[in-house]
Amino acid sequence: MKISRRNFLWVSGAAITASLAAKLGCAPKEPVVDPGEEQVGVEPEELRVQYASTVTQICSICGVGCGVLCYVEDGKITAVEGDPDHPINEGALCSKGSALYNMYYIYDEKGNAIQNPQRMTKVLYRAPKATDWVEKSLDWAIDEIAKRTKATRDEYFKEKNAAGQTVNRCEALAWVGSAMCTNEENYLFRKLVAATGIVNNDHCARL
Image (cartoon, rainbow, N blue to C red):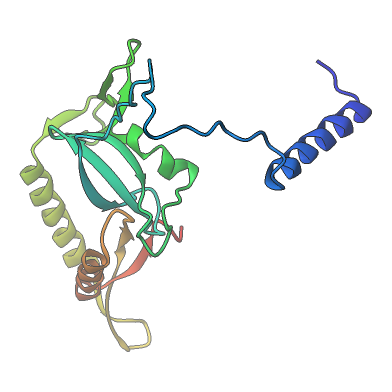
Protein backbone atom coordinates (compact mmCIF):
# COMPACT_ATOMS: atom_id res chain seq x y z
CA MET A 1 0.00 0.00 0.00
CA LYS A 2 1.48 3.33 -1.10
CA ILE A 3 1.01 6.41 1.07
CA SER A 4 1.45 9.83 -0.47
CA ARG A 5 3.04 12.72 1.35
CA ARG A 6 -0.36 14.39 1.70
CA ASN A 7 -1.95 11.28 3.28
CA PHE A 8 1.03 10.83 5.60
CA LEU A 9 0.75 14.39 6.89
CA TRP A 10 -3.01 14.01 7.31
CA VAL A 11 -2.69 10.78 9.33
CA SER A 12 0.12 12.22 11.44
CA GLY A 13 -1.89 15.36 12.19
CA ALA A 14 -4.95 13.32 13.13
CA ALA A 15 -2.92 11.13 15.50
CA ILE A 16 -1.31 14.14 17.19
CA THR A 17 -4.69 15.87 17.53
CA ALA A 18 -6.26 12.78 19.08
CA SER A 19 -3.43 12.38 21.61
CA LEU A 20 -3.64 16.07 22.60
CA ALA A 21 -7.40 15.81 22.98
CA ALA A 22 -7.01 12.82 25.30
CA LYS A 23 -4.45 14.66 27.45
CA LEU A 24 -6.67 17.75 27.67
CA GLY A 25 -9.56 15.69 28.99
CA CYS A 26 -11.61 15.49 25.82
CA ALA A 27 -11.72 11.69 25.89
CA PRO A 28 -15.07 10.10 26.72
CA LYS A 29 -15.57 9.52 30.43
CA GLU A 30 -15.80 6.01 31.73
CA PRO A 31 -19.15 5.08 33.24
CA VAL A 32 -19.35 5.46 37.02
CA VAL A 33 -20.05 2.15 38.73
CA ASP A 34 -21.80 2.04 42.08
CA PRO A 35 -19.62 -0.01 44.49
CA GLY A 36 -22.74 -1.48 46.10
CA GLU A 37 -24.28 -2.52 42.81
CA GLU A 38 -23.81 -6.17 41.91
CA GLN A 39 -21.94 -6.69 38.66
CA VAL A 40 -23.63 -9.44 36.70
CA GLY A 41 -21.47 -11.55 34.43
CA VAL A 42 -18.21 -9.83 35.45
CA GLU A 43 -15.60 -12.19 36.87
CA PRO A 44 -12.38 -10.99 38.50
CA GLU A 45 -9.31 -11.41 36.36
CA GLU A 46 -7.04 -14.22 37.50
CA LEU A 47 -3.46 -13.01 37.53
CA ARG A 48 -0.73 -15.38 36.43
CA VAL A 49 1.48 -14.34 39.37
CA GLN A 50 -1.09 -14.20 42.15
CA TYR A 51 0.20 -17.38 43.83
CA ALA A 52 3.88 -16.85 42.98
CA SER A 53 6.66 -15.73 45.31
CA THR A 54 8.60 -12.60 44.40
CA VAL A 55 12.39 -12.83 44.19
CA THR A 56 14.54 -9.75 43.54
CA GLN A 57 17.39 -10.26 41.08
CA ILE A 58 19.75 -8.37 38.78
CA CYS A 59 19.24 -8.50 35.01
CA SER A 60 21.89 -10.69 33.39
CA ILE A 61 21.90 -9.06 29.94
CA CYS A 62 24.51 -6.30 30.30
CA GLY A 63 26.52 -4.47 32.94
CA VAL A 64 24.06 -1.68 33.83
CA GLY A 65 22.71 -3.71 36.77
CA CYS A 66 18.95 -3.14 36.41
CA GLY A 67 16.79 -4.72 39.08
CA VAL A 68 14.13 -7.26 38.13
CA LEU A 69 11.38 -9.07 39.97
CA CYS A 70 11.14 -12.81 39.29
CA TYR A 71 7.85 -14.47 40.13
CA VAL A 72 8.49 -18.08 41.13
CA GLU A 73 5.90 -20.78 41.63
CA ASP A 74 6.69 -24.46 42.29
CA GLY A 75 10.34 -23.83 41.50
CA LYS A 76 9.60 -22.29 38.08
CA ILE A 77 9.70 -18.70 36.91
CA THR A 78 6.25 -17.59 35.77
CA ALA A 79 7.01 -13.95 34.93
CA VAL A 80 9.75 -11.32 35.05
CA GLU A 81 9.34 -7.54 35.26
CA GLY A 82 11.33 -4.50 36.27
CA ASP A 83 11.80 -3.67 39.95
CA PRO A 84 10.18 -0.28 40.65
CA ASP A 85 12.16 0.07 43.90
CA HIS A 86 15.54 -0.39 42.24
CA PRO A 87 17.54 2.89 42.08
CA ILE A 88 19.04 2.22 38.63
CA ASN A 89 16.09 1.39 36.37
CA GLU A 90 13.13 2.28 38.67
CA GLY A 91 11.02 -0.48 37.13
CA ALA A 92 11.92 0.18 33.49
CA LEU A 93 13.60 -2.45 31.30
CA CYS A 94 15.10 -2.36 27.84
CA SER A 95 13.81 -4.61 25.06
CA LYS A 96 16.28 -7.35 25.99
CA GLY A 97 15.53 -7.10 29.69
CA SER A 98 11.80 -7.23 28.97
CA ALA A 99 12.38 -10.55 27.19
CA LEU A 100 14.44 -11.96 30.07
CA TYR A 101 11.78 -14.61 30.70
CA ASN A 102 12.55 -16.20 27.34
CA MET A 103 16.11 -16.95 28.45
CA TYR A 104 14.58 -19.61 30.70
CA TYR A 105 11.35 -20.64 29.02
CA ILE A 106 9.61 -20.49 25.66
CA TYR A 107 6.06 -21.34 24.62
CA ASP A 108 5.14 -24.42 22.63
CA GLU A 109 2.41 -24.63 19.99
CA LYS A 110 -0.26 -25.08 22.68
CA GLY A 111 0.89 -22.02 24.63
CA ASN A 112 2.49 -23.98 27.46
CA ALA A 113 5.78 -22.73 28.94
CA ILE A 114 8.63 -25.18 28.39
CA GLN A 115 12.33 -24.89 29.17
CA ASN A 116 14.26 -23.14 26.44
CA PRO A 117 16.15 -25.90 24.59
CA GLN A 118 18.88 -23.43 23.60
CA ARG A 119 19.82 -22.67 27.20
CA MET A 120 23.05 -24.38 28.23
CA THR A 121 22.68 -26.33 31.49
CA LYS A 122 25.60 -28.78 31.19
CA VAL A 123 29.32 -28.58 30.53
CA LEU A 124 30.20 -29.53 26.95
CA TYR A 125 33.81 -30.14 25.92
CA ARG A 126 35.26 -30.59 22.46
CA ALA A 127 38.84 -31.82 22.38
CA PRO A 128 41.34 -30.29 19.93
CA LYS A 129 40.64 -31.41 16.34
CA ALA A 130 37.52 -33.29 17.50
CA THR A 131 34.15 -32.87 15.79
CA ASP A 132 31.78 -33.92 18.60
CA TRP A 133 30.98 -32.36 21.96
CA VAL A 134 31.33 -34.53 25.07
CA GLU A 135 29.36 -33.90 28.25
CA LYS A 136 31.56 -33.32 31.30
CA SER A 137 30.95 -32.61 34.96
CA LEU A 138 31.36 -29.15 36.46
CA ASP A 139 34.11 -30.40 38.80
CA TRP A 140 36.08 -31.70 35.82
CA ALA A 141 35.75 -28.34 34.05
CA ILE A 142 36.92 -26.37 37.09
CA ASP A 143 39.93 -28.66 37.62
CA GLU A 144 40.81 -28.52 33.91
CA ILE A 145 40.65 -24.73 33.81
CA ALA A 146 42.82 -24.48 36.92
CA LYS A 147 45.45 -26.86 35.51
CA ARG A 148 45.63 -25.09 32.15
CA THR A 149 45.77 -21.65 33.77
CA LYS A 150 48.66 -22.69 36.02
CA ALA A 151 50.54 -24.36 33.17
CA THR A 152 50.20 -21.28 30.95
CA ARG A 153 51.23 -18.93 33.76
CA ASP A 154 54.27 -21.03 34.65
CA GLU A 155 55.40 -21.08 31.03
CA TYR A 156 54.88 -17.44 30.10
CA PHE A 157 55.26 -15.56 33.41
CA LYS A 158 57.67 -12.62 33.20
CA GLU A 159 59.39 -11.20 36.24
CA LYS A 160 61.26 -8.44 34.36
CA ASN A 161 60.78 -6.69 31.03
CA ALA A 162 63.41 -5.95 28.38
CA ALA A 163 64.57 -2.89 30.31
CA GLY A 164 65.19 -4.93 33.46
CA GLN A 165 62.22 -3.48 35.33
CA THR A 166 60.20 -5.78 37.62
CA VAL A 167 56.74 -6.38 36.08
CA ASN A 168 55.57 -9.80 37.40
CA ARG A 169 52.96 -10.34 34.70
CA CYS A 170 51.64 -12.98 32.33
CA GLU A 171 50.67 -11.66 28.91
CA ALA A 172 49.53 -15.07 27.58
CA LEU A 173 46.31 -15.03 29.64
CA ALA A 174 43.27 -12.76 29.40
CA TRP A 175 40.24 -12.24 31.61
CA VAL A 176 36.79 -11.01 30.58
CA GLY A 177 34.36 -10.08 33.37
CA SER A 178 30.68 -10.96 33.45
CA ALA A 179 27.66 -8.73 33.96
CA MET A 180 25.90 -11.62 35.70
CA CYS A 181 28.24 -11.27 38.67
CA THR A 182 27.69 -8.98 41.63
CA ASN A 183 30.07 -6.19 42.64
CA GLU A 184 31.44 -8.39 45.42
CA GLU A 185 32.15 -11.25 43.00
CA ASN A 186 33.80 -8.93 40.49
CA TYR A 187 35.95 -7.52 43.30
CA LEU A 188 37.22 -11.02 44.10
CA PHE A 189 37.80 -11.71 40.40
CA ARG A 190 39.86 -8.54 40.08
CA LYS A 191 41.96 -9.51 43.09
CA LEU A 192 42.54 -12.96 41.54
CA VAL A 193 43.55 -11.40 38.22
CA ALA A 194 46.01 -9.06 39.91
CA ALA A 195 47.49 -11.85 42.02
CA THR A 196 47.90 -14.07 38.96
CA GLY A 197 49.65 -11.33 37.01
CA ILE A 198 47.08 -11.10 34.23
CA VAL A 199 47.24 -7.63 32.66
CA ASN A 200 44.79 -8.28 29.78
CA ASN A 201 41.49 -7.93 31.61
CA ASP A 202 38.25 -6.23 30.59
CA HIS A 203 34.49 -6.39 31.07
CA CYS A 204 31.80 -7.53 28.66
CA ALA A 205 29.76 -4.35 29.08
CA ARG A 206 32.70 -2.15 28.08
CA LEU A 207 33.62 -4.34 25.13
